[in-house]
Amino acid sequence: MGISEQLQAHLQRDFHVEHFSLPASGVDRDRVRSLGPLHAVVSIGGDGTLQGVSELVLNVSDNVLPPILIVPLGTANLVAKHLKLPWRRTRDIERIGHAIEARKIVEIDACRCNGNIFLAVAGVGFDAHVVHELTRRRTGPITKGSYVIPTIDTLRAFSYPKVTVEVDGKTVHRDAPALVYVGNVREYGTGIPMLPDARSDDDLLDICILPCKTRAQAVKWMLKAATGMHVRAEGAVYVRGHKVIVDGPSPVPIQLDGEAAGHTPATIELMDVRLPFIVQ
Ligand SMILES: [Mg+2]
Image (cartoon, rainbow, N blue to C red; front, side):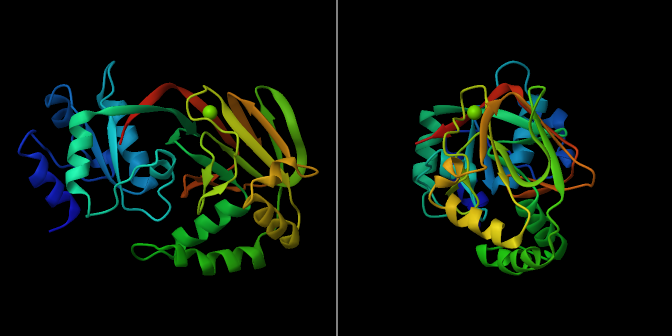
């Protein structure tokens, strides 16, 4: 029995439970609305699944948003890591059940990039190229190892295009190659503190821009970022704001919480809602 069925069987002792499959566009929204106020929404999957669930929750709710409980089944699970959720996969059904009953809530500012919702970190450039390459080759579920070949290919082939970054109407980086990260939580990728000062409930986006025009510089920045020291290194720009525009002379790939999300120009903004999450 899969986690969804196990959890459903467990929760059905106390709740009416309905199961919906993503994509969010395929879910019968009238059916969800007809259920009335929801005690909780359970998102079973990774950060990509959570994007779909968040979109659905925002679309079917009027004023009060139901809290989301994440059962982290993805590869990175950035939001679950950020919330320090102690449950993992199928082992902790009882614990998940207790958390849903107790409904202890932490809120996270929701962000949008070109209309797509995300909750952790948006990347423009090198990292997004890796994600796009992985998506292009992907034939089934992915693991951390799935990133190796796309990363090697990106190191070999990425051209480090010029970008310009504007934060709240002010240009903070002009027409030069860079790695650009915009987001709301410090966790990124395999847990690297790419945005070390980010807070998920301060109504602000954190923006990190690392000038980078060669493979050697990209590797240097990744090694520095592993310790969080990159933001104090020469050339790094670290600012906060509400609205970020990344543009340039040629289209540059974008990734949102590890999901491929088109190319620049990118308009990244905080939404005027916080999503409630159930924590331990
Ligand atoms: Mg923030």
